[in-house]
Amino acid sequence: MIEPFNLAIDAMGGDHAPDTVLDGIAIAAERHPAARFLLVGDEARLGPLVASRKRVQASCTIRHAPDAISSEMKPTAALRVRASSMRVAIDAVACGEASGVVSAGNTGALLALAKIVIKALPGIDRPAMAAIGPSARGDVVMLDLGANVQCDARNLVEFAVMGDVFARTVLGLPAPTIGLLNVGSEELKGDDRVRQAAEILRASHMAPQFHGFVEGHDIAAGTTDVIVTDGFTGNVALKTGEGALKLVGDLLKQIFRSSLAARFAYLLARPGLDRMRLWLDPRRYNGAVMLGLNGVVVKSHGGADAEGFAHALDVAMDMVVHRFNEQIRDGLGRIEAMKADKGGPQLLAAV
Image 1 (cartoon, one colour):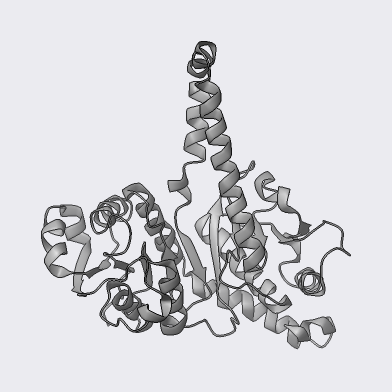
Image 2 (cartoon, rainbow, N blue to C red):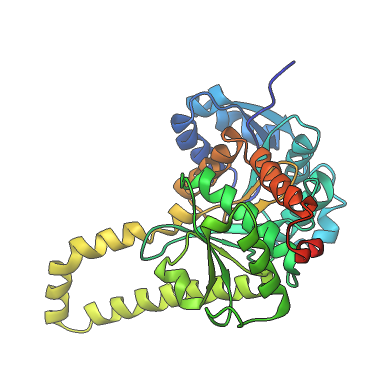
């Protein structure tokens, strides 16, 4: 039996594809020398580019796909383009030929195709979008970031299980702490679904890791390693954080350009600012992940450079190598076993 490709890669997705994609593969192939990639796209364009990159040539097999999904195409239209590089790459995961897929293409199309073609894992009601971001205490995982605008207690518990496994797999944390995003940290705060999810988690095998409720400021503070919320709240929090970081960067530029003394102060502060810039480098956090599907699905930012795309490949490779989905099944199985325990809380019947 032939081992599946580690990853199928949409070579034509992204603002600077396929060059950036191939340069990113070259970087990732050096980090993962045993990896095998299925490179999907226009063979006439890819052939000469791959031949000029020896490391890419050694790790990739090209599969021809004549069409590409544009960034403006609606998901419903993308579903009908069966010969697109994105669709062919996703089909490879659905049939077991590849363990995961990475694309920098149209986000809506990728999510729609992944949900319909790859489908959710048994026991997962709704897949969730997760990503890693910076905090005062290190990297933090947050989900859902927009895949599910409305969620019930069951969904939030499933997100907690998936976030726990993601933090173990990608961040290497042996026992990541988990917090439920709420309007306050007190137990009586929030609506029924959040309070029910908290009660379930306190009664589960994840109880030692469950911190309880966290608030918006706890995200940047790094109060917990995993932040769990619904997709509406998560997306607003994500965009607010991105806007705040951009504002701080713009203000610092204005301050250090405001006078000769300020420019001199910049020279003195530059080593520290360089460390901060490296710490907050968006390339380190490139690669949003669709969790809860029958395969690994990672979305790279469309404008990512080669280093950023390589980081998205690193995230996907970590999930494949550490058998991410098997760990999710184990976590959900333990929750189900607790539900079956007659001595467990009756509230678990809601999950």
